[in-house]
Image (cartoon, rainbow, N blue to C red; front, top):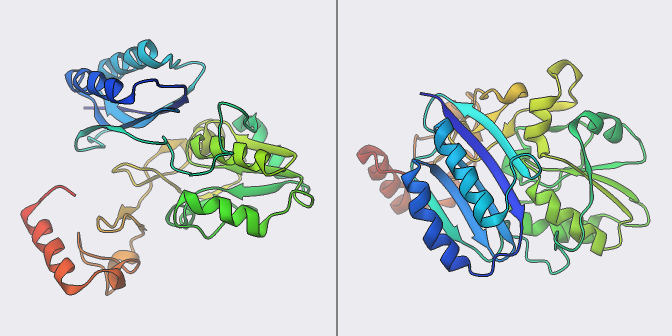
Length: 293
């Protein structure tokens, strides 16, 4: 069976989040959808999967409720032969991507979108600062070769990095990118509010770039972390040869699984020191019992 995976988001005012969650969850369950969708006063954000007909029903539901357009809005498709998510989650949130910055309102202002076909030319300009907005466990497996990679563990740390390390007078042209585009919506709005005069971002994110730009023309190096069981994808959105630590979520290459601190479902070299013996014993029991993580 082939699963259609759809990554989507839309910044749109949602007047009653609780009512939207209550109505949407049973409908998506009826359609056989798995994955997660977040609903907040500012909009929707999700990565979901199902049969082709189930995803068509999902998109029709989101179009009716939130005005989401599969042609005009941020909707991206990929495919998998195994079920990419264990269950369906429809969750209310304060933000569809947590940033906690008042100036980051994409409904008021946003950077200039750059199509994947035009991205290589932009980031080849020596006057352009190329900026990765993702977290360290994502950037460690792939990025653009000339990108500035902030040492951040969560997206909320991005604002502090910008204020401490970047200067609107010096960095007058900034081109940023993220996995699917949503973080750049907030990051670009924030940077404009901080006085950066020209802010660009990759439309559709790395995923759209890897889908549209041939490998022989690509400036992408490595793989792109994704938030499902595929762990990461490469050019053409083909699943990469990576695993994942189900304790901390870090992507694992084959050599990471040979590390002394790796234990399936319990720890890896990134998180071994962060849990005590009691927690590790609990993780081992969970692993042995096959409890969903």
